[in-house]
Length: 108
Image 1 (cartoon, one colour):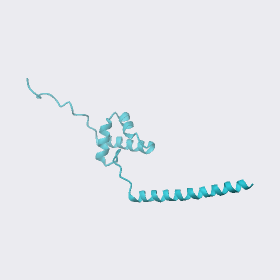
Image 2 (tube, one colour):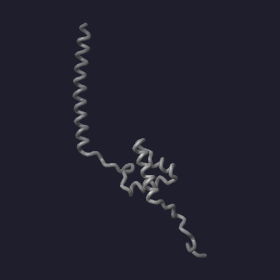
Image 3 (cartoon, helix red, strand yellow):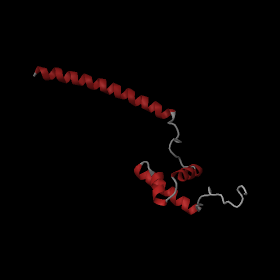
Image 4 (cartoon, one colour):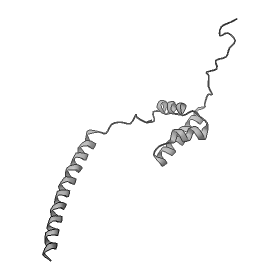
C-alpha cells in the first residue's frame, strides 16, 4: 500500500489563457457598467467559470470588486454638509412663504 504515490492531484483545475481571462473580465466590466452589478455571476453562467475564480482574477487585475471601493473624500462630506445647510435654509424660507400665502388667501 503506497501513500499518495501514483495518485494524480485531483485539486488541479482548468487553466485559462490570458485571452480567455481578458474576455471574461471585459464581459464582467460591461455587465457592471450596463446594470450596475451582477457581472461576476453573469460571466460565471455565460463562460462556465467559477464566480470565485472570476473574483480572484478581478483582484489580481487591479479591478475593484465589491467592498474594495475607496471611501469618499473629505470634499464629498463637506459638500454634503453644505447642501444640507442650503436645504434647511430654503425649506425655512419656503415655510415663511407658505405662511404668508395662507395669510393673504384668508383675506380674500
